[in-house]
Length: 158
Image 1 (tube, one colour):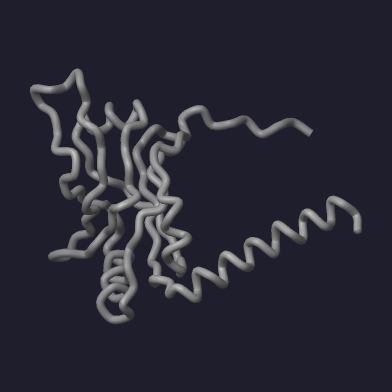
Image 2 (cartoon, rainbow, N blue to C red; image 1 turned 45 degrees about the horizontal axis):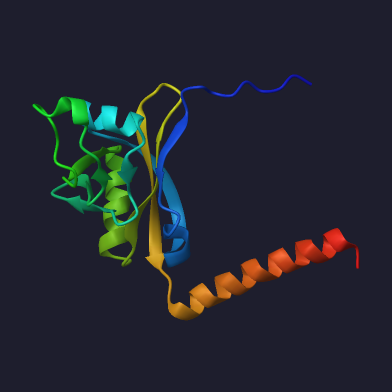
């Protein structure tokens, strides 16, 4: 069989690996993000962090707060603020669903991955999540450890 051709434009910029540990992910959604030119150029060099960031619905719009994008060195004149609020682009139906989940059900909107898609556009995968308690985190860790131990036993052929 012929191998599927890898997409050359797809590239992960930043990943929030801690989110799956701290939150129980209910559903996820891909959305666009409004950026300045210097921010996109900085992202192409891979200088960003979304670990401490979150998204919130404010005044009928979805905003990404506290995401770090390093300043672009060559664009000092028309640079950008590193941790400014950035507007996220979603359909109205999704916006209503996200607003209901955060206000009524006590959920949080957590960014999971920021990446360049196949067309070279910056996209952000966000998730509706509920915070885990300490015992939930322990249970997840125990389940993961048991999975590793099971794989080890199968490999050894006991």
